[in-house]
Image (tube, rainbow, N blue to C red; front, side):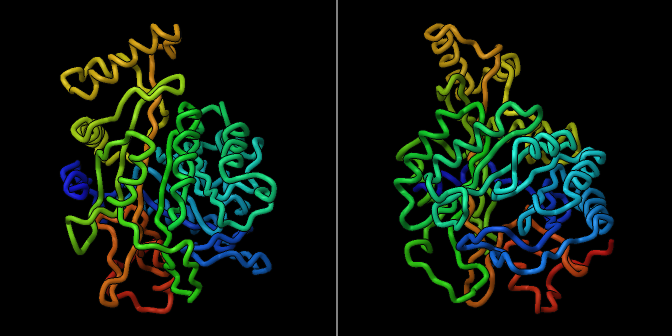
Length: 382
């Protein structure tokens, strides 16, 4: 029943060469260890492998020209260790691309974050979870560490903040506290990514308390026990159109009060309008605020009427009108790749393809592809 509810939502029409996201990894090594890492990093004594900035710029050019991207996602390894990160972000920004940084945040001071934002960085997404081996979590919980990042990075002009939470077999209590954290920090945290733990690198390392067979509908059910979110859009698996691999939900609020969810029909309308106007698909927004005047243009949508009604009620109750705007908070639930009969079941319209040795490859299974000829994937010339 839940699966049907999801697949009745807006199916995102992304494809290989018309896709809102490009993925690059300027550095291959990392400064902490995370179980389930797609790249299998964590050996802090390893020599850092940095890609030349000129080569990365060529990758950015290719993504913009041939994949029609809207956003450049920068990951790794740990990208904050890359010595030319600001220059890379500034180059992407000069091409009218938005930029998104995936980091463990260990090296992310406020000063560094301000420097990245001045270079054009739009969003930083910090991976924090209790299974990581990291020096800044020896005396605090994962929730407390996330709050430290909120306090450290708040009110940096132009920079939005998100978090990644890997989903383990034993994560229900974490999700309960995380939903409260997200509500209390509604205006500060605009993106929450849940990714289901998998041993993608097939290293033989198996942690029974971590790995699980959770599906996207299972995960949505779990989250809905603690927060009233509703699915709006999804990507399907390559092998089965009824199996969601990415699921988006979006809710609006103000003053730490949830006003309502963005419906699937409104999500579809907004993304189709953006596509028609800009000739590319939307991936991340420049701000997590929506003007009330914008919502008044779509009052024929029941979900919008509910949000506006709750906005008026809360405004009169608190006397706070949030400058006539509301915040939105996006949830992304990720299943990741799975092996079926010896073959990888991937996302249809995969947003996280990256360039590696003349091929455009799924970043999530790159370690499994490095020693293969990968004839089934498209060639890239940069």
